[in-house]
Amino acid sequence: MLPAGSRLRVWPNKLRRRLGGSYYYALGQRAFRVGQFEKALQLFRDSEAWVVALHGQVHPHRVGAILRQAACLARLDRQAEACELYDRALDIVRELGAGDTAMGKEIRDYLRDACG
Image (cartoon, rainbow, N blue to C red; front, top):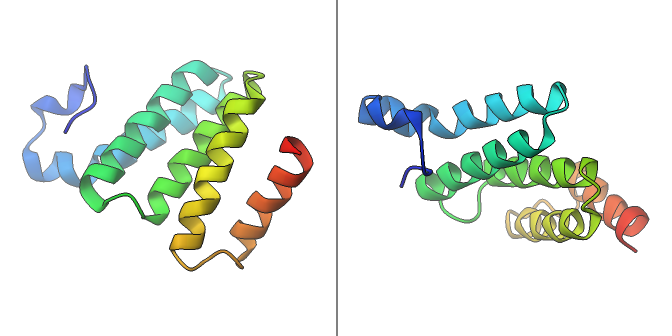
C-alpha cells in the first residue's frame, strides 16, 4: 500500500519495497531540521505506513517513525497528541522486549516530565 500521492509509484517494485520507508524518513528528517514540522509530520506518517505494510505493527523502525511524529507534534505545540504517540511508541518498545533499554527509559522519562 503506497501513501496517497506517492512519487514512488513509478519505481520498480523491489526498489520501492526496500527504500520506501527510508525515503520518507530521510525526507522527514530534512524537513524537521529546517523547521518544516507539518511537512515532516506527514513524511514520518508515510514512513510509518511503509514500515507497517512491510514489517507489520511491531517493528523498531515503526517506533522511530512514531517518535519523530511525536517530536514534530511537540514542536507544533500539539502536546496532547505528542504524548499519545510517545505512549504508543512505548507500548511497541515493550512488545519488542526492549522496555528496560535506554530508549524505553527515555520515552518513560518524557512521558513523566512532559505528559504528567
